[in-house]
Amino acid sequence: LFLFRAVSGSMSLAPSLVTEAACAKVNLTLHVTGCRPDGYHDLESLVVFAALHDTLIAETSETLTLTLEGPTAGALAGESPADNIVLRAARMLARAGGVPPVARLRLIKRLPVAAGIGGGSADGAAALRALLRLWQISLPADTLNALARDLGADVPVCLEGRAVTMTGVGEVLTPAPTLPPAALVLVNPRKPVATPAVFKARTGPFSPAAPLTEAPATAQDLADALARRTNDLAAPARALEPAIDTVLAALEASAGVLLARMSGSGATCFGLYASLEEAEAAALALGAAHPEWWVAASPLVDDTRAVTPVL
Ligand code: C5P
Image (tube, rainbow, N blue to C red; front, side, top):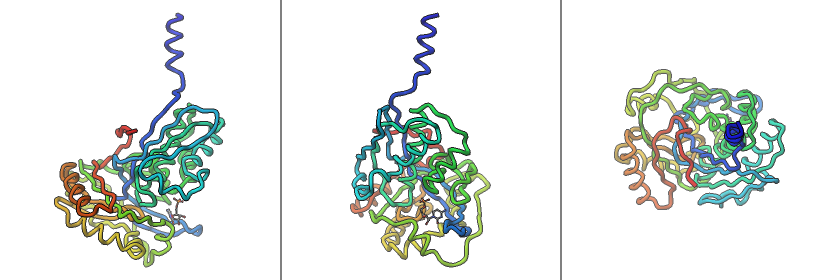
């Protein structure tokens, strides 16, 4: 009996350290379908992920601290540490869960910042996931979704971590049809683009929603379906940041590319390829031709729970 108690007791112990991958999100399509009185826009977007990620590590502590490390951490140097989305997520979750906001958090940043691939949103979502585990709290899905939405419009989709059609301002998530195996090359010209400026620069009529309802059988079928849809933020983003044109042209000229498009509000663009081998070869060539760019290849990820966080 004692042995049983000891074993079951240790199994229910809260972890003292948890690690979460904060994967890049990629908007395969992005239709701006309307504008709300508060200035936010209604969207319809097919969102998938890349295995490329920031890593969030949370450990038990008696205070709340955050350290930033990794190759792109310097881009956050101008931000007040208390405003970092990871700390905001921690404080909001502690309040909602009725627990003290204490943890030692480390964020290893690798994704480019202000890049249209939801790096900050993924970090916020990873903090929520990590602290739910560290603090052993559970909240209703609606409560978590609303909390994520308060952190930022892209945080709910990053918290979901699965291929979805995203509507509302980003908080209404519907499972996407099954997607075929495919790979992505992400290219960022290392020029930050401010999302509010891109939305503000958007002009013309709103797009109708055109959700993908049928499962494409092949990567080529997926590319064909995407080609009938758009990223409505590409035109205003390109007007604000001409480097996006150069990136798109280079991706379009790369061997094996099925489709090239901007993600989110830019400036990161993606190329879609049928295989990871082709994507890796394209990334190698693009990186060699443009050493000033951030270039990375990844499988197209439809469930980020399959991604093992690297330290
Ligand atoms: O919610 P978040 O702070 O990430 O949004 C950044 C900015 O992007 C908003 O202030 C708004 O200008 C714009 N935005 C929008 N409609 C959305 C999402 C973001 O207009 N659905």
